[in-house]
Length: 412
Image (tube, rainbow, N blue to C red; front, top):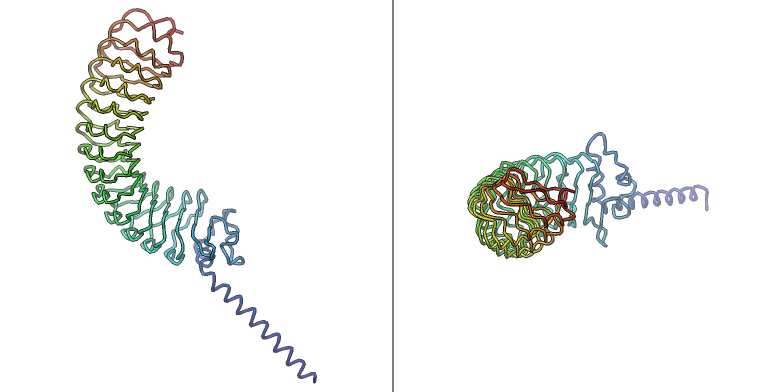
């Protein structure tokens, strides 16, 4: 073979190899557009987020499914989950997230994400979890989220989101957790929320401008375990339909403008553990049906305008640990049945019109740590049996009509 032929052959071989490698590299890059999307997002601001946790999001490793932090992929190599928590990245959300077609869970929490929620989020049709809590998000909750028919968890708390809760959210028929507390939301609670029959948790508290009545349709959320509307401006009566929530464990509607009576239907919520209805304008008496709540542990009704007596049936709530009925207009005597509450740690009824004597049965509350009876009309002697309450560290009884001496055990 001539020298010319040899050189020509070698050049052809080199060029072929070069173009093969080049085409392979281009093909490889084209097969990983998700890596390009994520890398471009991370570098969309100047300076780039400096967190060491993100150092392996680089252009050299073009496969996020290999070892990129916070990324989970399917067996086929597509991004299914982004989970970034407590990492300061200080970016806005990319509008092209729907290009991650297999994305099911998006969690970017405590990352100082700013800007508005892009309408395009509604096109991430595979999402089951969307958690963008504890960031600096502004603007409104886009109605387009209603297109997320597989969404089970929506967590947007602790941002600066404004505007109304979109009634279209009711189209997310699989939604179980709706967590929007501590934002700047306004308007009313949409009655369409009652269509979310799978809903387990509603937390909308801390949005001080949310107003209007609590929609009775909320009673149709038959799987609800947590109802949190505290520190809002909701008003009107507590709807009796709350009694339909047979799985409800926590009722948290404190520091609001609700008024009227506590519905007796509340006694039908047999799973209730916590009732937080303090700092409202509730009136009427404490319903006797409260005694049906065998699992109740905390009953906070302080600073309302409740009247009548403390129902004797309260002694049936054998798991009660804390009772605070202070700052009301309650009258009558302390029920003898209070002695049935062996787990009771705090019993606070200050600033009422309670009369009669301190029942000796209260000495059966062997777990009692705080007993606050001050500013009432209680009379008679302080029972010596109170001296047997070895865990009692705080006993307030001034501004009453008590007489006699302090029992030796209490004085110690």
